[in-house]
Image 1 (cartoon, rainbow over the protein chains, first blue to last red):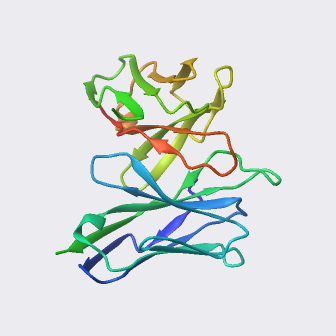
Image 2: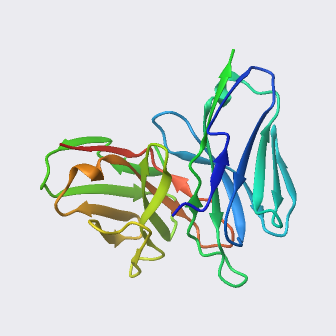
Length: 115
Length: 113
């Protein structure tokens, strides 16, 4: 069964606009990660946020985590055509205070950035 | 050279055939994973291994088997392929330190006729 549900399934924006993707999950987690997948390629890790963190930044990426609502969002600011890809959230449920090393992936959001 | 290499990249075969997908890594990671990706379903974990002597079933292991030949090599086998195993297969690795991301190969596109 899928842990993560992503919203929207598809998003189309103009270059320069911001893109926001949301992820909801069902069980408690140790950490939540976001990955990008370009067409025909493997997934590339973008950012990891631990369960005790609320917000994290990396370049044009901003991730928030609300464990009370079991949800996370990924914001890409000032989008570029090269950001066109599928984006996946993935959760590690954790085992006690440790991570399990196993990720459960959401179904992904397909982002198209038009030049 | 890629850190995680999957071979073959594409494979078309017939129902009932035995197929092996191979994964090798140069990252020195102990943990390796096999996933399957179907349209609209994201990635699902088939098998994983945390070191050479460790093999664990994932969410969808039925119809698959694996072999961890060395720290750097992790193979996935379909003993008797069936059409609903047509999918994109990914190998991934990670370090065993706390909260480490996974590193993916570029996948094997498998079609079973």
